[in-house]
Length: 140
Image (cartoon, rainbow, N blue to C red; front, top):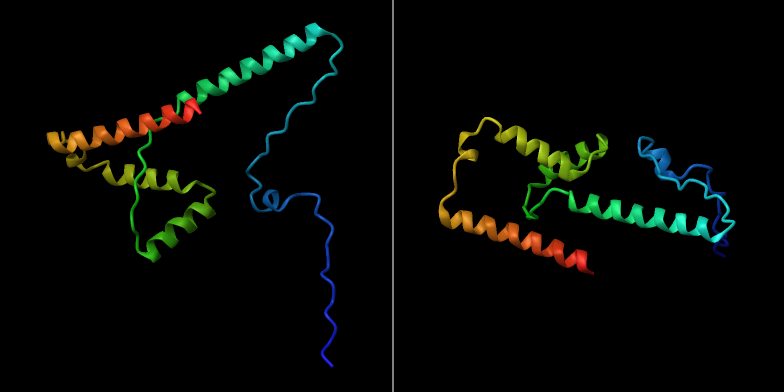
């Protein structure tokens, strides 16, 4: 006769989340405690505060630098090193790639030469497509 299956063991959740344990440098934003509202004027002040917060968030969205997405195929060993470094350094893959490219292109004079007109048109089209995509996102 086969042994009986044991029911799954459910452990109590830890006081700190797994993310906090694995990534201690990441701080979580916590909303400050809100005072109790007593009259309509306090409600109006709170609403104005929320509106100004939203307006500031919209301003920050517009200040993001333009980024042009692209794809690439890397050998698995190179991707593994890139991914491992980004994880261990607690940096986004995008930032590691950007730093690497800036360092690589720093002493390359060809990188600062003007592009031929047909290549400039391709690059301008990519920039315009990204700007258009941003505009569509904002209107949703």
